Image (cartoon, rainbow, N blue to C red; front, top):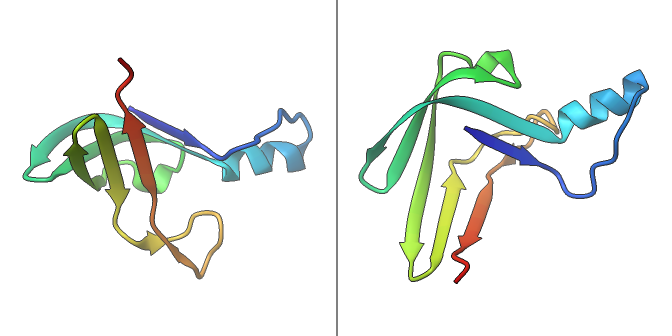
Length: 94
């Protein structure tokens, strides 16, 4: 399962505020497999129904105590017409 949110999100109750919350979130779940330096998630359920039934590929690299996960460049969910990629970096806590 993956849930990624934008920084500085604020709660909202109005239709416009809830729409902004939706635009600042990515969430999906499913089974995964590892293929070399990629893990592939077969998406069962997502915040964006268009992802349901698709495969999401992520490149990963482990260096010491750091895990880096990158998405492939693709169309922006937030800004149609733009191409973006995502990067998550995790540091092991000791």
